[in-house]
Amino acid sequence: MRFHLAKGVAVAAAIVAVLTATACSSSPSPSSSSSSSSAATSAPAATTPASTASATGSGSGSTGTSSGAAAQITANWEKFFSSATPLSEKAALLQNGQVFNSAISSFGSSPLAANVSAKVTGVTLTSATKATVKYNLIAAGQSIPSTGTAVLENGTWKVADSSFCGLLSEAASLTNSSVPAACKSAS
Image (cartoon, one colour):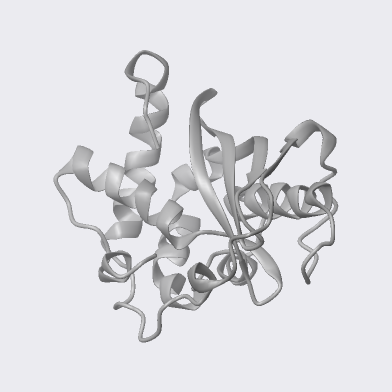
């Protein structure tokens, strides 16, 4: 993920404040690793702009079309970053979410979290189980163009733990704090 200094000082400050609290209180590292990275990667890449993917909910199960997958990725990505989403649902939308329960809880309980959201602008399927997500991370009325990864885990497209940890790492580097132990083993 890239932070553009000119565009994102206010956004970065809000995100750093929220994610610093998150990084300081997450749970220990996971006991099992993700199996999604070992799945077949022979599916052709497909790009679907978010504007053509309807966000109809999280859905479960793999979709048979790239536009169906893009719609589920878009909906789940935006739902994960929405302050209206209950914490229990956020964990279900994050790869290995149960490992990050404490971090997600800290993020959700921060007053600044109400001002952070994401708007997906594009999804590119890179395999049958992975996609690149272009999105705007929004806080304090400003947005930062960002890129992350979505993974298909147990039939549901989720925010990759590596993307979540990337946000935490960025916050840690700006605040001289540490990332959660769970991020050290994230895929």
